[in-house]
Image 1 (cartoon, rainbow, N blue to C red):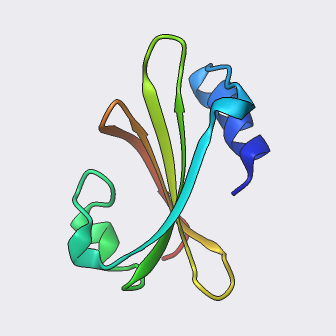
Image 2: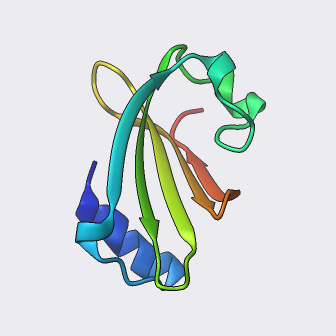
Length: 99
């Protein structure tokens, strides 16, 4: 995942300065039934592959807010299909990269 993109997006959109060395990264495969609506709402999930590859970047800012950006990637091409932003356990934004 692009750490520079994440830190730039956090600054530009959310006005949060991110310390790169404090960003966590994880990539996991999930079946649809393993995910809840907080991460990906059911109406979005039905348009995504099953199982799906989810990459996440996480960061806790100076105020103690936990930020998570999650990306569903196409398995073969690694093309981004879906993006979700969560702050303190609440979805605050998402973007679908398909019709």
